Image (cartoon, rainbow, N blue to C red):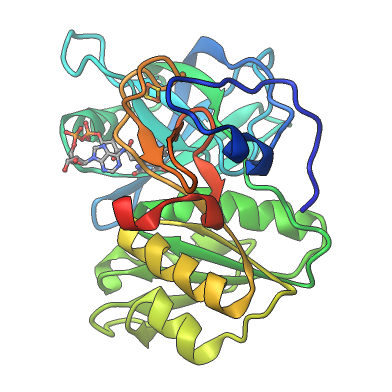
Length: 288
Ligand SMILES: Cc1cc2nc3c(=O)[nH]c(=O)nc-3n(C[C@H](O)[C@H](O)[C@H](O)COP(=O)(O)OP(=O)(O)OC[C@H]3O[C@@H](n4cnc5c(N)ncnc54)[C@H](O)[C@@H]3O)c2cc1C
Ligand code: FES
C-alpha cells in the first residue's frame, strides 16, 4: 500500500500502538470552519438528496472518504453537527457536494433548506481512501448512504485512468438514483427485492459475479452488516479492503471518543480522526 507522509496523527486513551503502524497515514491539512451557501438541494431518489454548497477557497481541498460536519439549523436543537461524506468537489467553482438520506430531525431540516441558505461547515475531516496504484483490479462498493463518497472515489480513479467496477446496493428500486448521478461509473445495481438489477445484496453479487484475488483492492462504504460481509469476502480471497465506517458522532474532531470502534489487537480507534477510512483487517468486526 502506498503511504504518504504523516503530518497529523493523534493518539488517545486506550489506543493501541500496533494499530498506529498499520493505519493509513495521510497528509492531512487543518480543517476549516466557515459559512457556506447552498447552491442546490435536489431529491435524487426516495428520501435521498444531493446538496451542492460553496467551498471556502481557503479551506483544504477535500479527498474521497473525508467528511464535513454541518450545523443544520440556527436553533439550539439539533445541537450537534451532523457528519456527511463528500460526494464531489469542483475546484473551478469552489463547490462541494454531499448525498444524504432524510432520517431524523437534522436531515429533515437540511432537506428543507433552499439555494442561497447558509450552512455552518467544518471540513475536510478524517482520513481519505488511499488509491492503491500498485493493484490491477479495483472494486468500489456502495450501500445506501455510502453512495456519495464512492461516487467521489470513482471520479478520482477515472481522472487517473484507473478502471474500476462500481457496485451499488439498496433495498429496492425506489432508492436507486437517476443514471445521470453515475457520470464517472457504470454501476451494477443490486436490490434486496430484485426490483432493479441483481436480486440480492452486494455481498451476494460479489460472491457470484466478481473474481477477487491479491491483485484486487475493494473500497467500500455502507451499513455495518454490508461492510462486515464485504470484509470477510476480501479476507478469504486475499483482496485488500478499505472500508469507510459510520458512527454516531458528537464532537467530530477527535475530542470525545464518542465514535470509537474496537480494533484488532485491543483498544479503540476514533472514526472521526483515525477514520472514517480503515483497512478492513484492522477493525474488530465481531464487536462492531
Ligand atoms: C463519517 C460519516 C459520514 C457520513 N456520511 C453520510 C452521507 O454521505 N450521507 C448520509 O446520508 N449520511 C451520512 N452519515 C450519517 C449521517 O451523519 C446521519 O444520517 C445524520 O447525522 C442523521 O442526522 P438526523 O438528525 O437526521 O438523524 P437523527 O435524528 O440523529 O437520527 C435518525 C436515525 O439515524 C441514525 N443515525 C444518526 N446518525 C448516524 C450515523 N452517523 N450513522 C448511522 N446512523 C445514524 C440514528 O441512529 C437514528 O436511527 C455519515 C456519518 C458519518 C459518521
Ligand atoms: S466524535 Fe468525538 S471523538 Fe469522534
